[in-house]
Amino acid sequence: MTTFADLELNPKILKAITEAGYETPTPIQTGAIPAALKGKDVLGIAQTGTGKTASFTLPMIHMLARGRARARMPRSLVLCPTRELAAQVAENFDTYSKHLKLTKALLIGGVSFKDQDALIDKGVDVLIATPGRLLDHFERGKLLLTGVQVMVVDEADRMLDMGFIPDIERIFGLTPFTRQTLFFSATMAPEIERITNTFLSAPERIEVARQATASENISQSVVMFKGTRKDREGSQKRQLLRAMIDQEGDALTNAIIFCNRKTDVDICAKSLNKYGYQAAPIHGDLDQAQRMKTLDDYREGRLKFLVASDVAARGLDIPSVSHVFNFDVPGHAEDYVHRIGRTGRAGRSGSAFMICAKRDEKAFAAVEALIQKEITRLDIPAALLEEWAPKKKPAREKPSEPVQTSEPKPDPSEKPAQQNRRRRDRRGNDNTVVGMGDHMPSFIALSFEERRAS
Ligand code: AMP
Image (cartoon, rainbow, N blue to C red):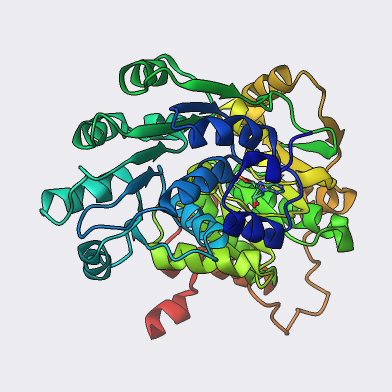
């Protein structure tokens, strides 16, 4: 079995690896590191969780340990599709280069231009960037890419999804022809194949087994959900989520809850908080500082529930998540594998739950077809069904019975017009206005005297 020592990395890097607690290199590292150290281009077909970040960061640091940075001309460049991934690469870089004196700049949205400009002016060994932000800096004349000796493209398939391929092609064109390229993608779509054929020269291709199915140590279950009232479907679904969380008890230490839409991410996080579950949303419309803080809180255990969209969560390295909840069935079946792959990492066991609404049944069938496994069906808890069951109307009160004097509290979820109507009914007057739906103007529910007084 290959050890890190066999990879002939700089001893100061080996020291940092040992301190990080890594014992043996992962398959993508065993394949990519020797090729990269020989100066070859690398095409790594691997996804998050395989150790791919270290497979390009470690040889880069090894190469950068020799030589010095020059003003405005970074010596290496890492391109990432999202700010979070870029920040994660930067963190990896710091961890593995801690015994070496290397400098870096991070060009991502939400980080001030001024500070990064100052760093680049002085000269940096590595520049970690999202494509758009890098081109912004370049166009402002603050940066030269002609000193780039190693260029990394991370998560190229994600770049393709996000429409960054033209930017990537442009950036390739701004770097020297003689550069070394380390290129990573989880899948090889035809467009990605074309880019690698154009910009990589005789690459060493390393492919690590794609997670076509979820790991065996993740238990998977689903609740088929149908609300009892169309207008309450959203709140009933959130109530079901809370019941599923509660049922897990202490086995749940932290969880990621995935929603398909950003608006639902917000609603779901807000609702969980309202009911005393510590939750925060993460999606592309939230500002960078807030996203970073949420992730930090989550990683450090200060936050128990992360409510996320697929794009925001893709590629995030969050160790030891006990539970994943799919509040919606993902529209793309492969996203299901990615989502639940957030739990059950590194040999730990994990639990994945999903809520499948009526309209999601087709997407659900696609998920089961992809993973070639039947997901365990769970029932909606009986207490909820009872609560949701349509209530029988109480019989009309007889006139001889005493009239109720203390008013029950109005249900805050009801509209004022509904509350008015209900109040009058409880006084014993059978004057419910029929045919107005929920939109009855409140003055109609007032008595003649009340109307005159108002
Ligand atoms: P990545 O696929 O780069 O997102 O890495 C996934 C996780 O694996 C990260 O938390 C790394 O710190 C960790 N990791 C990377 N290489 C190793 C290794 N050789 N041994 C143990 N953990 C590793």
